[in-house]
Length: 112
Length: 110
Image (tube, rainbow over all chains, first blue to last red; front, side):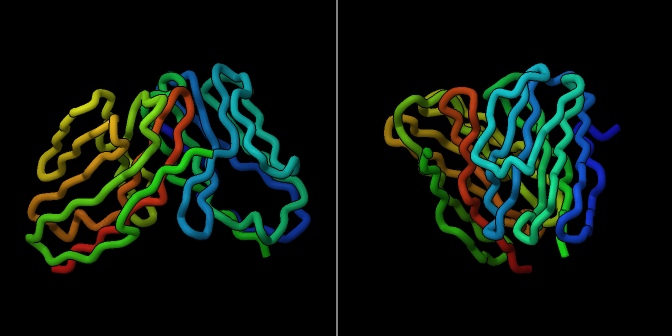
């Protein structure tokens, strides 16, 4: 069983659409994260949830909204997609804040 | 914003060569330093978690050292193999948040 699974793996969509990326972890971890890999392959934190509560919310457009229905899931919803949103998005989880991460396999989002 | 730097940015070595690269981080508020190995089209995988000044960790041909007082960690690969080709990421953890470096991209030429 995959420890941190993201769906879909690839997402191609038109500008202006609304889309969601799902993330689930079966490790029993308390903390989950969303990272965006920029054009230089740098991982930038977007959001972090601990036990379903938002603890990190970096400066991202408010078109991005995370949702954590339970501590095993952290979904990312993006409204009114723009060309600049094209990137690879990684979900990760850790046992607690500051502990080592387990990453998902990434979702490559392409906005056309 | 904390500055975590890795050098060099990229590195090409011949199969069999040994190599090393550096992660530099602030020397204050240290909690942990993580190393990840990130192969193309895959997700980053944890290599080491280092917490104490002077720590040395080893996994096969890969080892790492930590100097928290001067704010650096070295990753060493002995006898590089083509399968070692990947980006090696470090993450500085001052408390609860991870600050990733930009990575060192290693290519091992057969």
